[in-house]
Amino acid sequence: MIEFTFWDILRNLIFATRWTVLLSIAAFVGGGIVGIAILFLRISKAKWARRFASGYIALFQGTPLLMQLFLMFFGLPMLGFRIEPWTAAVLGLTFFASAYLAEIWRSGVDALPRGQWDAGASLGLHYIQELRLIILPQAFAITRAPVVGFLVQLIKATALTSIIGFEELLRTSNAINNATFEPFTVYGLVALIFFVLCYPLTQYARSLEARAAAR
Amino acid sequence: MSYSLDFGWLEGAVGAIARGAAMTVLLIVVTTIAGTLISVLAAAGRRSGPKWLRRAITVYVEVIRNTPFLVQLFFIFFGLPSIGIRLDPIVAAMLAMTLNMAAYTTEIVGAGLDAVPKGQREAAFALGLRPRQVFVKIVLPQALKVIFPALTSQIVIMMLESSVVSQIAVSELTYEADMLQARTFRPFETYFVVAMIYLGLSIILRRVLVGVGRRTLSAGVS
Image (cartoon, rainbow over all chains, first blue to last red; front, top):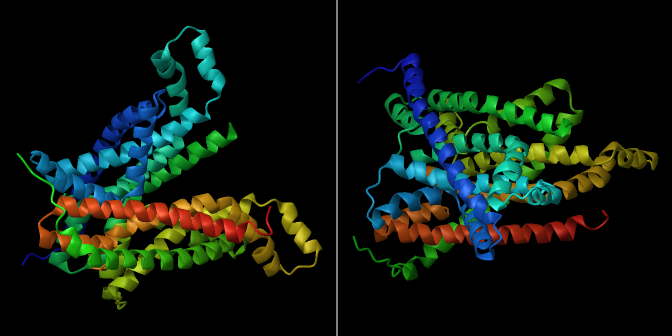
């Protein structure tokens, strides 16, 4: 049997952290792209589009992320896709993130005064130009704090992908724990690593919030 | 590839699903009550307690809010026995859920306490109420009224997050789903049905909380 020192445990955990970071980034970027599409539907003039988008958001916010991951993991192979834990994890977290981000950005769009739309129209801009040049830049700017706050939530959510077999930080720590029988140290260190990832972002969100409140 | 959905197993699974859902409801009821109580104490302590207490509460809130619930659960269930604290899975789940939710609701309750105008407290003191009466009868009800929507959302989020306690073999809804799909070989259908039950539970839970809030908080507070 291999002996694990404290430093071996820490080194292995830090190595595994890159998958957690990578997954967070992939899901955040993917969620942002899909989220913008959902946002377009959510604020569209067509009733069916708005209804579809609110249904989509309600579905992802009203069911556990673990269920969403399981449905990805077991559902996509039925459609004929070969699926690995990595794909299921990225896709599951992308859809999860898109629903939350769309809802955050929509609150930003709603917070803008009606006059912004009217001013855009009076300048002769059409709908897409209005959104691209006037509405969305402002909506993104005023929702920066909740978006960073959601990123923290997303980083923490990556821990759930260990359950569908993706080798991120927590799954690696389960394996190390099975070899070392030092759960107190191992899970304590995992918590510490997540804290180091999340706390600066939490503080950043807080400073953005304070700046927005002061304005 | 052709695959046809099969829900034939559902009939024999109603009992297991109902038992699991009942356990999920039990977990969230206990967590809601204990978590709200703790967060009221912590929010009040953070505002008027001694300095060491304030600092301890801040550390607790930040540590919980910046680490995943699943890691907290594993730390409590697998980690604590090595320093001599051995917990039953259900107790560990309730403890982890309560500690997790209270960290979020401490911030929420605190925001509510800050939102009550100072004049309310001064008026209550002027009427001769004792400090505890001022807090319990005047400030707290108004604070709870302000934060009720945020508190409701947090409780629903916690109910959804409770699905991960299946990982330490607490026989709640997700655990029952895991067992069922292993027996039926119909994982997609099983998790789909259970996801819909969670959706229903979260809608019902929200309704019930709003109803309870309207009944208990509207009286006496405008």
